[in-house]
Figure 1 (tube, rainbow, N blue to C red):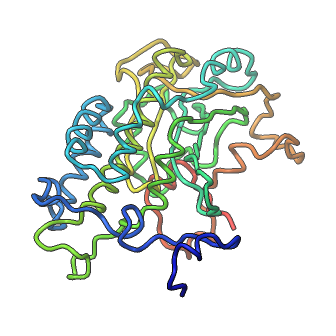
Figure 2 (cartoon, helix red, strand yellow; figure 1 turned 180 degrees about the vertical axis):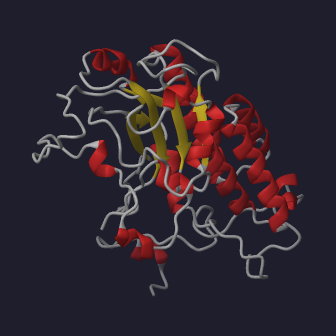
Length: 340
């Protein structure tokens, strides 16, 4: 160790290692008076109740209310993560490419797309590099009534199917390719991934007494803000660019510490999009690129040359997965593949 920091800092190979007490590394500048949410999170029951309230808001499609609630909670926090959350506005987050959805589906030669699933997640094999940001990943599936009677199902029916061990449509996506990205969340997502306050042990080793650690509370609130901004972007894309007739969007988040699921669209009977259709028409979205339709009874042996398709990314139940730990229904719903 160099006793003279001034000399050491001039060395060509000098690397500054921040002290553990530096804000954003380990230490968190706790306020003198605890934030009300720190008291709520002190006991597991209080934290669970708050999380369920947030999940209920997003599951009911009340993203604006969730946003207002989170903004109010963040107002009196001033950690690095809280400041980043405040700087990430709804207008900053955009679902890029959604305007291509309807034109591409107009040329689609397969069965009518009657439902679309869109999930927000993080890949399990992130490679951490200094200065590199990680945008969240989107999992998208285009579905028809060949896998499930979406056209005759109510929103409640869809949510009930989502809650099953394996939804009926798992692995049955139509082979329509589309490219859609979510911009505006990379910085917040990276900060959440790298956050050093992701755990609240409640065993006396958390460094605070009589309150939940402020850094941990900011992490939980920030995770729900990430999910809320995603849902707001989805709602805005649907409102601005529309959805196929009779198609609904099943949107949610998985493995971002803020899991939820909702169905966008009015839950009322609407014009059928196929001979079997007779009910709810609702939003669905996804930018796609057209591809010749191959009937499911005649699977092709040739894999598409322009990258993995949705069908390749989403897996149904397989014998090899039976021995793996059971994942949440959200992971199964959006076909979360464990790579590597």
